[in-house]
Image (cartoon, rainbow, N blue to C red):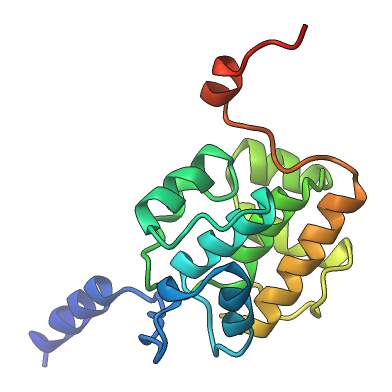
Length: 187
């Protein structure tokens, strides 16, 4: 019995606690932007790959395609997601993770907790983002932030973030510094 306990603990440590999204019947990579969002609405959960693609669509008003590595680099460059999260392509995202991404896309400034602890110190960034999203009127209740969300919940939050961004009359997120430096100066 004593030899069994360390083995069980090792198994739990190796397995982790992330939820992996089952492979869908339709390949989302084959869908164009509008069809992708329509398809996503009916899904029981959203993967990191799908979340990155949809958030970039909201931020740039263009479909970036389904290349996870490229989309991941772009969301990191635009500070929509954090490298520290180490999200895998098939890993289901939770409400707090998506709330952080949506607030970044919507350019919501947020309160002191989100800015000091979440954005500056990277301490509980997703949890504070979830609280801020609920406070700002995100289209879901104040349920547990680490629950996996459905595709419908995701698309409604994405729509909310896009409307907030447009209402602020700001263009999509600014270009990354490398692209801004290479742009010709206006005369």
